[in-house]
Amino acid sequence: MKRISIPEIARLANVSIGTVDRALHGRKEISETTRKRILRIAKEHGYRPNLAARALSVGRSSIRIGVCIPKEVHYFYDQLRDGLLSEGRRFETLGVEILYQPCERLGVGELERVKELLSNDLQALVVCPGDPECLAPVINQAEKQNIRVICVASDAPKTNRSTVICVNPVVNGHLAAELMSKLLAPNSDVAIITGMISTEDHRKKVQAFSQMYQQLCPTGRILEVVEGHDDEDETFQKVFALLGRHKNLQGLYVSTANCLPVCHAVGARGLHGKIRVIATDLFKEMVPYFEKGTIPASIHQRPYVQGQVAVRLVVDYLAHGRPIPPLYYLSPHIVMRSNMHLFREIRQDGIPEV
Image (cartoon, rainbow, N blue to C red; front, side):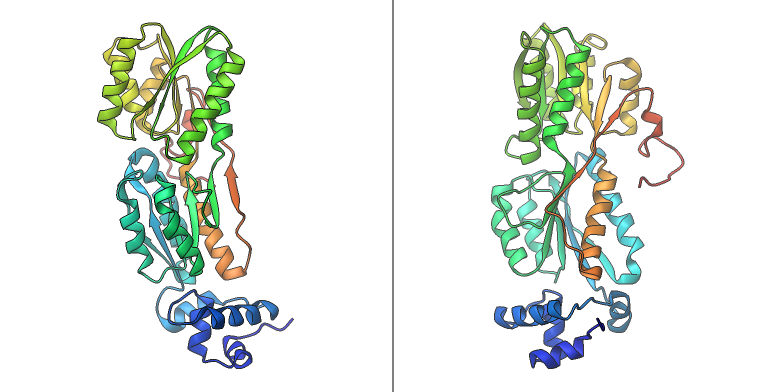
């Protein structure tokens, strides 16, 4: 089939070229009826945009991607951001532009930052929803305006978002429980340290770990679930108090990247080597705790790759018309002392993960 051009679509739809451009790129100042008619004609005739040529001809970005992710816990979100930005640079010749507008922590200030981003004529929005119920109206409105919403690291499943990119939180929780059950005696008491139960990813990990641990260690107990809100000081204080209340605690599952204050609390109680911590993700500051045996294993969610994939899905959709899958689950990696040097977060060569 011969590739149809924007002027030909304009002729068939009986509108101006500018109106076609606004419809194809989700811009404002066009009625929904006209937009649907133009998109139908473009689809029927197999239209595929030449984004590189368009970027050169108009002198500005053709794919503007807004990014709202937290700053903290920075060990995780810095890697996610770097993956997004590095992949964005790879597609600069297609006119890809990344607008980075972080919020302070998960669920803190994210609604305001997302609203600011959506006023910038976006084609896509990447967001890590800490409070999915609060974000639901703006996510749905964005999708209605043909702005594709990509959730990373956590989901907003009751919205019309285009996709979620993450490690399946149920698999994550099950895997952590299985590791814990093999490290401890069957009657061991453990606790879970998470961020916020209101966050989809955190809630599902807690539920999955609890179910699997009780199945594998039926005589063991999950004594408490501690919400640290991904705040280092709050998490340290709560875990320090937890360890004081429960003298027989044998293991801790930390379901977010906020494991350092947990390890600090273990050390402050003089419990290095006595309590096993199953952690999440990987960064250089964790190395001493792997070496001490405080962290025997961590479940790596590959945030750098999550960022890369988010940009690729948007570019593939807008440049090549490839549909965005409703779910994109990455395989988790188990990190232990013997293999941690293989991961990009620890390696010194700077080679990006693929």
